[in-house]
Amino acid sequence: MNGAGPARATYREVFAVREFRFLWSSVILSTAGDRLALVALTLLVYDRTKSPLLTAVVFAAGYLPWVIGGLFLAELADRYSRRSVMVFCDAVRTVLVAAMVLPHVPIGALIALLFAATMFAPPFDSAKAAVTPDILDGERYVLGTAALQTTLLTGEVLGAVGGGVAVFYIGVRSSLAIDAGTFVLSGLFIGLGLRARPAVAKPESAQPSPLARMRDGFRLIFGDQALSTLLLFGWLIAFYTIPAGVAAPYAERLGGGPIAIGLVIASTALGTMIALPLFTRLVRPRQRINLMGPLAILTCGALVLIALRPGLAVSLVIFSLSAAFGVYQIAANTAFVVRVPNERRGQAFGIANMGVIVGQGAAFVAAGAAAEVVTPAAVIAVSGAIGAVVALVLTLRWRHVSPPGGRHAAGRRPGHAAASTSAPLRESG
Image (tube, rainbow, N blue to C red; front, side):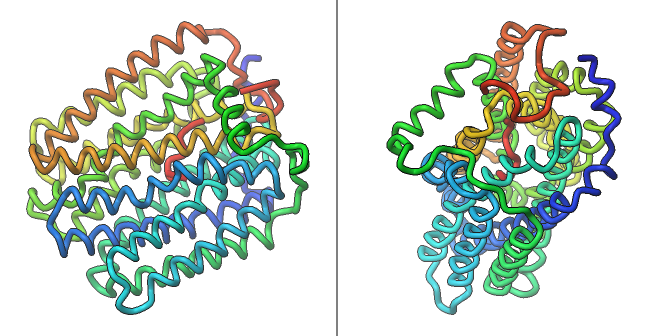
C-alpha cells in the first residue's frame, strides 16, 4: 500500500464523528485538571520543604501508581464496556480529589489521595485508547489520535501554566476543587456522548487468573521483537521529560518563581502540541515510520544543550524544541496498535502506558536525588545524552526488524491485524 489514499483524510472528517467530539472534549477537561492539581501539590511541597528530592517524590506520586493500575486495572477496558469503565474511573477520581479539598488535610494525606486517584487513570486511558479505533478507522484513526494527543498536551500546557497562576492567586485547595469539577464534566461527556459497546474479552468465568493474564500480556508484547522495539521507543519519554521533574529547582536557580516553574513544565509539552498536527497532516504515513528513529534521537539529544547553562528564555526554547521532535511517538503509536488484536488492546495499552508513567516517575525521583548533588542543568543534560544513545540503539534495532519499504501497516485499519504504542504522553495519558 502506498499510503496515498489514507493521507487524504482530514481533521474535519475526524471531528464530524459525534462520538469522537465527546471523547475529545473529555480529554482536555480531565488532563488540564490533573496537571493543575499535580503542579499545585508540587509547588506546595517545594514551598514548605525547599527539597528537590521531596518535590520530585510528590511529582512522581502522580505517576508511580500506574505500576498497579497499569498491570491489574487496565485490562478492565477489555473485560467490561469501555464507556462504563471510563465513567466509573471519572466518578471515583471525582470523590478522591474532592477529599483533597477538605480543610487541614496534611501533606502526607494529600499525596496518598493523589496516589489513589492516579491508580484509576490506567483503566480510563486504556479504555480511551482501545475505543478510539472503534470510533475511527484507517488514516482517520491516525489523525484522531494526533488530535487527542495534541489536546492532551494542550491540557498539560494550560494546566501547568494555570497551576502556577492558580496557586499564586487562589491557592491549592481551590485549584484542587477545579480538578474535581473537570472529572465530573469528563464523565458526563463520556456517558452521554459515547455509544455503549459490549466487552470484547471472554466472560469472567472463562478468564485465567489476573497474574496469568498479566503474564500473557507481557508475552504478547515482548515475544515480538518489532512490538517490543516500538514499546521501548514510547518509553524513551522518561528521558526527555526530565526537565518537568526538576522544574522547581531549575527555575529557582535562574531566579524564577511559581509562574516560571509552570512555564518550564509546560515547555516540555508545548513543542509536541504545536508540531503534532503538522506532522500528521504534512508527512505521509510511510515517511512517519521512517523518521521515527532519527526524531527519537533528536528529542533526547537536544537536551544536551542545557549543559551550556542558558537563561530561562533559551531554556524554554530548548525544552520546546526537544518536545517538538517527540512527534515520533505518533508513528510508534500507529505501528503498535495495528498489531494488537482488539480483545487484547486495552491490556496492551495498559502495559505500554504503565511503562511510560512508571519510567517517568522513577526518572523524576532519580533526577531529584541527583539534583541534591549536582546542578539541575547537569541532570537534564546527562539524561538527554543517555536517552539519545538508547534511541540510537533502538533505531538500529528497528531497521533490522522492519527494514525501510517493508511491511508496517501504515494504512491498515487499527486493531485488524492478527497480533501486536506509543507512549501516551500523559497520559502521561
